[in-house]
Length: 152
Image (cartoon, rainbow, N blue to C red; front, side, top):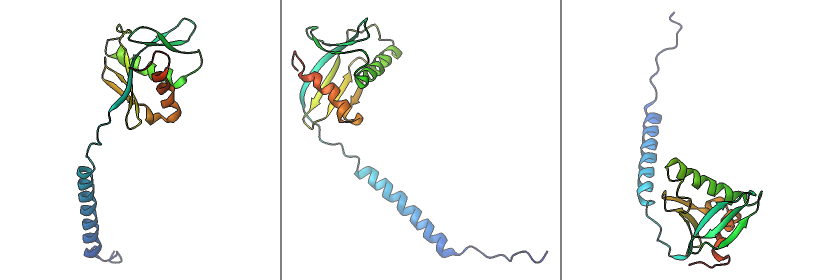
């Protein structure tokens, strides 16, 4: 039984080094979090339009200007998947909050001076940064700002 390895303490140098490294990483992360938390400058709204979206019996989705009810665009059945999915998600949020009976409540589409395009639902407070889904998907909504009827 005396053949068991003899007791050898862990070397203090590597242990102290690991402690210093860990402390440095934690402090760097904390400082970086506070320094990097500045809010980017606010961009100004360049154009905005309030829109309503209506499902049609044939599977199309009509996009209407909320001011005067004029048709801005029609997403034919089987097309505009991103637009349909985004609006379905926003409608689901309304249903979850018990405000699906406000189908006439508009959504606000905005283009900002820094080039971003956003979609907001004033009924729920949901805000969608469309650029996060890629340029093509962002453009699916941005074109609605310049469609017949104009942006306000």
